[in-house]
Amino acid sequence: MSEEQACPFCGSEVLYEGYHNVDGFDMPFMFCNGCKGMFTVEGSEDWVHGNHDGMDDLRAAWNRRAK
Image 1 (cartoon, helix red, strand yellow):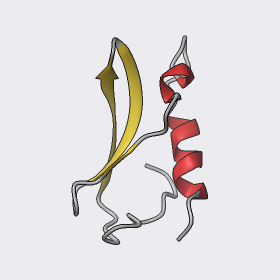
Image 2 (image 1 turned 90 degrees about the vertical axis):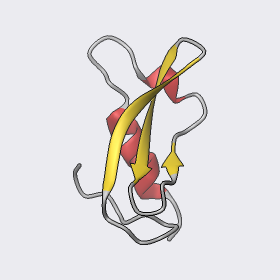
Image 3 (image 1 turned 30 degrees about the vertical axis):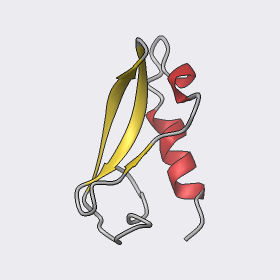
């Protein structure tokens, strides 16, 4: 992970990235190992195509959230 902010719910910096299959689409998500919160963005399954894994867009959304 690169330059992510801490979890907005518990402050943990132990964050993981992955994919969750929803209705046959891979959705990128971020997961906090501290509070077990998971973050994704509706429509993010559209970010995953070809050589683009969608994680850059998800990181940008994560880092835009209010503190």
